Length: 300
Length: 243
Image 1 (cartoon, rainbow over the protein chains, first blue to last red):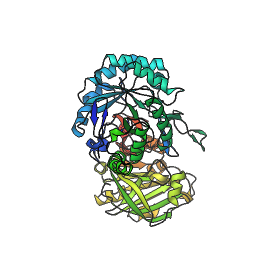
Image 2 (tube, each protein chain N blue to C red; image 1 turned 60 degrees about the vertical axis):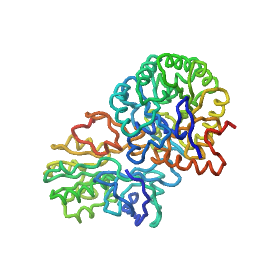
Image 3 (cartoon, rainbow over the protein chains, first blue to last red; image 1 turned 90 degrees about the horizontal axis):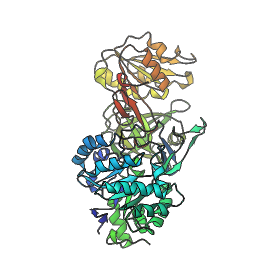
Image 4 (cartoon, rainbow over the protein chains, first blue to last red; image 1 turned 30 degrees about the horizontal axis):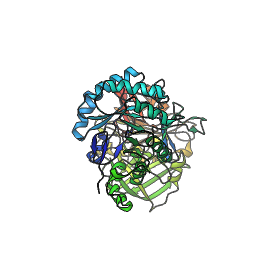
């Protein structure tokens, strides 16, 4: 049974990747299991300047999922490089995926340029899809032109594979993915969270201080499978599928929808061992399905 | 942090909506008074963070208030049922700072984590005074449990239907103390911040995603930098809080 896959020229022991924002910089999880068993992981979304993020409450529960409006809280790229990456190096010995966000093309460019130089960074995952910040994030991912502009600008200053993370909150995700591919993207990851909202019945107010937030969790899995299927049918570059993945079977389903690798997000927050369990279960499910090599799975 | 399965031994009502649940299981990850656990419930996506009232080598006592559908489901659970629980979450109170005569102030469902703290303070030779604040007589719980520890217990009720009329800060005026420990609703914590004449430790509450520091859902700003209520908290020093 072989779980290895190749993501933009780098071999992963398996396709399982904890998604950005659900795994911090890895340490909380490294305390409870050896995170070197992961394919890789995508670290907490990093911006040029430090950010505290949104006011609390930032979290609301939903049926089979949750809404978050954290708002890209992070210490800023300088501290990530000086403090987080040296710490990470001690507990994780594989290339890591650097997740980057910004509020202008220049910010994306500078943050990516700095992280690209870091030895442990294997891929840059450029988030043009955060629904929780104003005037940035998602606004770059909702038009093909803006997404292409960021892609092109980042590609100019980087040497590592650039993966653009797309938002599902758009009319035509395929045109945006193709625009990124044409602009030089090495991969596409999707989907970020769906814009959602919950109301506190007693207070008659939104539960989330920011009113709306990103909906994730098993409830969104079918939407994610559909979008991964649409995008992977239209582009030639690798697609990383994510959105509501909670089991080894979901990982295989994502790959049958056309994903090369698969990210696991919200499940890490309710079951800190989710990725470990999925990785251990993969060979069992492969055997049941008669899959010898995971990388043999073709888009249906 | 440890994930393990606990079995319910007892689940009883203390008031109309406050329950005491005693669980048997591996408590080895619980290392300090004021820590919390995060409980998985069938049919709910996120876990429920509940402070630890008391613990020993093999049992865990939680006192929780029914505030929504999750805790309502918990309140209907029976002895013998099992729960998947993350234990050993958060920092907990620091016993070293207490001095000889610490005062413990609990408001409503903020009372429970002070119980194990009180036991530990007594064990190290301190003489704590406990002030428990409630809205009215029917809501009072844990008074006898603290009294059984042999400490001075003052109960306050906002409507005066039991004990001292008013807030915990009204009772605090007549207490001599060397340090304070508190847990309760934020307006109460603020009032203590104004009234207290010594440093102290506060335990805070916030809606959480994971409860173990991964999601940044429960962050707050302090004078010593951004902190996660679930990881660097829930207990914070009076000197670092920005009210």
